[in-house]
Image (cartoon, rainbow, N blue to C red; front, side):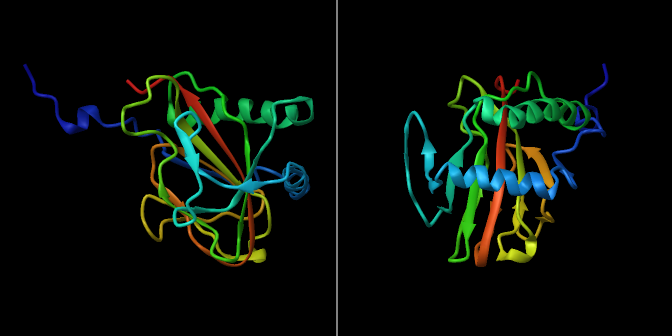
Length: 200
């Protein structure tokens, strides 16, 4: 009987954990979503878990956020995201039973050091027996010339996902990532998490 080698259990070559999509949204769509996000009156961001308690900690996360309701006004956004993640998942991740459960987040980071330190979006401690985040998405909604700093880095310092206004990146939610501190201006983004049953 032959022994299994590491080559036998590696992921298929077609899989990718970071998938940038240039020009995911038009400039006009970005502006519209920014206005809609501002109309929701963003509040100071928190860390933690909704059910187990959330709190502010500006050493870890400094930004403001608002969440788009799943109503008729925002139906176009959710329909687009559901359709797109099916294709992105099929062609890149291959995760099981992806769905859109959480509300879409509008985020603003400001030039007074707004940031989010290294973190995964998925729980990796094995305590979540329900649904888990499997794919995360971030779209830059304003011009890169409007702020300094605010780089989205994945896995390690300097590994920057270069985004221009309207560009999106889909990535595996278990990957460590951060937004580096802003020193000028405001960074505006759209964030979505796509969930599914626990990995097995």
